[in-house]
Amino acid sequence: MAGRKLTIEELGVDPLNDQAEASKSSSAVSNSLNPISTKVESDSVSQDPADHRPGRLYAIADIHLSFPTNREALEKLGQDGQHKSDGLILCGDIGETHDHLELGFRIATQRFRTVWWCPGNHELYTMPVTDASADASVARGEAKYDECVRIARQYGVLTPEDPFVMWEGEGGPVVVTPIFTLYDYSFRPDNVSLDEAVDWARETDVEATDEHLLHFEPYTSRQDWCNVLVSKFHQRLSEAQATHPGVPMVIANHWPLRQDLVYLRHIPRFSIWCGTTLTSNWHKEFEAKVVVSGHLHIRRTDWKDGTRFEESSLGYPRQWKDCMDMGMDINGFLREILPGPPAPEGGNAPTLWRRCDQASYNPAELFVKKPKTSSGIT
Image (tube, rainbow, N blue to C red; front, side, top):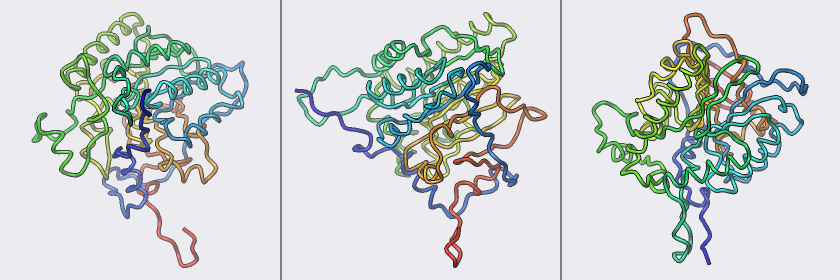
């Protein structure tokens, strides 16, 4: 009989969990990240229940359904029928197992008109088992990805392997292009070689779970797989651009397309598992209106060259527990991709950091606990 697969919680080796704990107890965050410190209100997600209106396009990433709290939260996603006319991009890290994917896809397709998905690293994991006699034919690498694609298609979810389609709702028309690029360890300093990259991260006790659970068969390495994927999706995006000249794109990829969008204060060397420099210019090359990502578990909005970048993670339960305690549910974490806000003058703007129902240009206002006063009021 096959042994029981270990859960992510039981493995307990994801450095992003440690990042969450550290950021909650940090005493300061450098204001030099962005000189603007004015606090602003977050643009809220529309709750218009009318089905006759043109649909809006939303995104959420990193819902991590291995955690019971997140599974319970998912049940509330669009449960009042307010998103029946809308589209949803699931931007990776739904979970590790077929059951996680089926649950996520079932609820999403019940609550939204159109659903897209692109894989994160967690979907690609081959989970260990507690019994050495367990079936050894568990899918690895590209075969695991192919399994995920098949499950998505069973629910009518559009994947990176399907033809890219036009979104005609509010803020459209755009071509929605879910892609899959993985990473090649290139988000590292110039003085660190590729061969040294993982050891360089380990020097600070940082190592991605991917090194143990994300296999790369039939390729020779993760960076080799990444190179194949980058070439493949560059061609796919080029073809979409030629087919729909002048129509902007919404590019969805679990990993950030640009290194300058990766800021992990407590685990900076985790950056090597966060993308590839080969995609740095894709937002301009393919005339992207919006680029959607996840992976970092730090929600933020950036403007680069007239393109809006949205990190749209939910994250692990302890990363959004304070938001739950404030009465916020998963619907409050949906990022409105379209129509979205207007572009800033000049096409560039400081990072807008997001936490719970607030947003600020100064991360210290959102991610640092304020000391208690003598009355106990924070």
